Image (cartoon, rainbow, N blue to C red; front, side, top):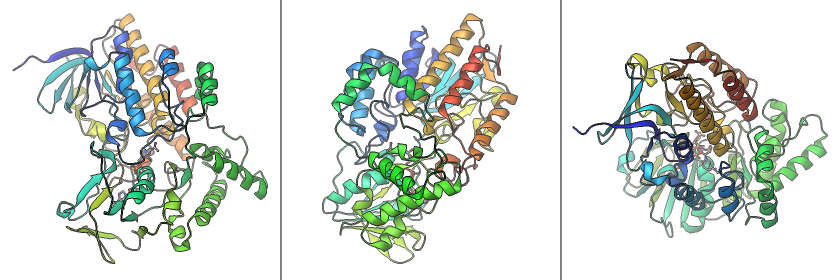
Length: 531
Ligand code: N01
């Protein structure tokens, strides 16, 4: 048997979180190894190569800030970067900081077990390679386990079956093809307008309509870029004080305080600006049903203006609270339904009965397809962690620890799982903030904690169970002040995965989260136990 490899820290995943964790922990003098399941780095941006995939956060914000030279030298071509460019950026970061030599690709971790006697994590890969490490950094991603619904007959389909989150690397062409797509979340909303331009016929199967705001994407405004780059540090600092660490110009006014005419003007202005900041049009869209209704009504009006067939428009009008699912950001999504070669099927009136060898059998009829695309999302936030057999103190499994939902402290650690850290885990702002900003904050926090341990000659750290229970309560109590936990069935709550415990997973509010982390660090990591 080959001897297990020994590291100070292992990082699981080579997306943005894994890359920065490697860079930072290496700078502490630690021997670090990154294991990555894919054949390349980039995480989300490596796997999600579907047509139209691009970020919904401005390029000058969705990027690392740890290196001034890096943020000055990289040139983004568009306001919202396309997937290929973000992937190129991730590869550039890896090369610029010589990270690749410590990344092992094509390696999926199957088990991580904490050894109480040595205070080490013992890991196993699917290829039965073994390793040990003092620290385990779970940079496994929030949206990295794709969800394939359990449709009857899935294996029967004879055409090309694709999932947006596992898109092939070779170019896929839909010219002259009959194409079906299931799902109308962010991925589908980006892909549909582009596939519609190629396909002979595109049929969209919708269960729940999503709210989508136009991106108004454009080539990068050079003057804006120059201004940001001239004061990048201040720009980042300013954004870090905002609700989601985004430069989204939040309003301090209630939607119910202004006249109907003024409200319409403000919504119209935000619609014209486009993107996620639409939700910041007023300060109570996430907390007051009546305020939220005004935004819903405005967007319904837009959909009915854009989509000519009013039956289709009505189906596309979401009936849920706006923002309780991730707001989608699109280019020509609603307009696409005016094309003769695009049709919408309402799965609530015509449910899918099975997948057939030709396509989809709904309660109404059989649809025949050359290609069938599943845009059915992910087992979000907990899926990638639970896919590994993680066992902490006394061999307790993470699955057992998370039986009733992802118990954690700060979204970073779990009691009973010493020296294991999650990056943007459940219980952290993660998906409800600028992910790269969150990643840097988490990794910096962990690096400071490890430095503290080294200085104080501690070998083991974990959250105590009381802090963990209090944290879960806090995350829920904040969410419960909003319309989001109950306003729809979203992956934020695990509702998209049958049997998954229903609990609002992300921490709402980026700056207050960072204040809490800083305060804990300033108090010698109060709420953590060291030995
Ligand atoms: O996945 P989703 P996604 N039968 O879960 C439907 C990020 N992202 O890949 O709502 C029929 O949002 C499901 O229907 P319903 C972003 O954070 C970002 O699109 O459950 N339909 C829904 O319509 C986003 O939120 C970017 O009723 C089924 C769809 O599939 C997250 O990733 C781009 C079904 C899944 O939507 C996930 O987005 C892309 C079934 N059995 C993604 N199961 C940007 O940065 C599921 N559905 C722009």
